[in-house]
Length: 203
Image (cartoon, rainbow, N blue to C red; front, side):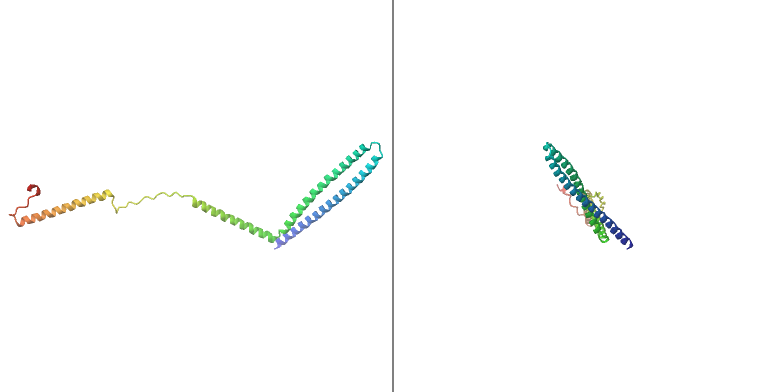
């Protein structure tokens, strides 16, 4: 609180000093403008007197030309001085405008401006983070294919065909063995009965 009061006092002192300077500058310019106006009137009056004096001379034209040159030179000097004063006026007006803006920036407005600045920084960081996330999402990630585990439960087609062939052969061998055993049992019961000829022997 004390710092704020000191700051306000300093702002008021600076504003008062600047206002006093502005008033002094305005008074100085006004005084110069009044002097220029008086000098112009004096130059005009002197020119009128010179013209009247020229009428009394023999070479009137040369005298009037000389009087006009002197009047023009004096008026040019006054005009340049007036332009300088105009520049000073513009500078004073610009300084006054800046001072008014500075006076309007009270601590409350400065705090509000600081809050707005912090909010803008936070919004910028948020937008930057979202932009980075979008870029990361668009960037393709290289994924190496995972090697397939060997499936030992299902055989390959070649192995399956080999197993089927072996199964068929064993089944055929078992069938043949069963038939042989039945024939042997039948012959053992009736030894006089000749066995049936094989199809090749029948031919």
